[in-house]
Image (tube, rainbow, N blue to C red):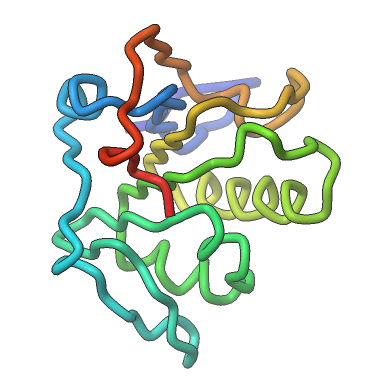
Length: 154
């Protein structure tokens, strides 16, 4: 499936979501369920181990901190194996121009380039501009409180 933009075929974009704060009801709407501790895995990514919360079927669930420590080669390697990614534990107090956040945005660009559907989960997000890759994701917010013991964060 392609869309014609500026006269040329473009790959279809599969939008994901930014889900705030990530309650069970919000996640369930998209068929997502917080992984149980027993689902944790260590995957081989570009020859290096990477800890993830779950890797089943086409879905990879990883924490923001783990993903922020991953190299570009790790991301590209895993993007070829998993078409849907959930990244939870996004720090709401992060500074949008911090090196950690900039690395994360670079990772998001790589995932979009690999046509990965991306779900981001956090209590809040730092402000980001309209030119950010995150502006392509639909935002789902709720005023529900997220109990600390049910947090999907790292």
